[in-house]
Amino acid sequence: MAPPVAPPPVAFAPLGPPGKPRSVGLVILVSIVTCGIWTLVWSFQNGEELKNHNRTGLGGVAYLFITLLIGLVTMFLMPGEIETMYQRAGKQSPVSAVTGLWFLLPIAGPIVWYVKVQKALNAHWQSLGAPPATGL
Image (cartoon, rainbow, N blue to C red; front, side, top):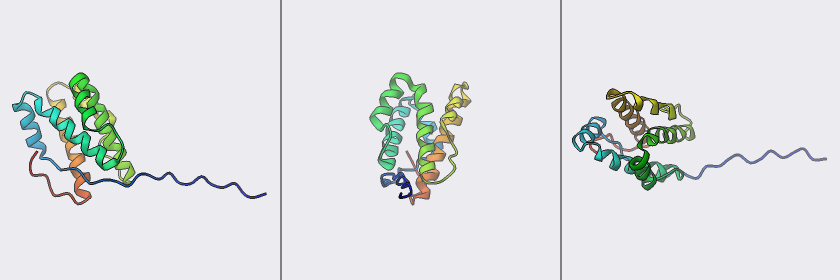
C-alpha cells in the first residue's frame, strides 16, 4: 500500500503592485479641514490599493459604502486586511482588527487609529519599493 500523499501547499495569487504611501499628518489635517469628507476618499483609495495588491478583499467601492453607512465597521475591517497582507508577506503586522478599538476613544482615538493604520500601510508599501510618503 502506498503512503498517503500530502496535500499540496496553499498557493496565494501573485501579489499586485504596492499602494501609495501617504503623509500621516496630511491625511489627518485634510480629514479635519474637510469635516471628515476626506476620510471617504482615503477609505476608497486604501481599500482599492489593498485589493489590487492582495488580489483579494473588499476593494474601494465596498469601503466607500461601508464608511458612508456604518463607518465604525471600517475601523475594524481595514486593519484586519492589513494584518492579513503582512502575514502573507511573512511579517509581523503592527495592526490588527483590534486596532479598531482605538476609534472608540473620543478625539484622540481616531487620530491614533489613522496614525497606526497609515504608518502600517506606508511601511509595507515602502518595503516593496514604493517611494516615501509625500502627499495624499
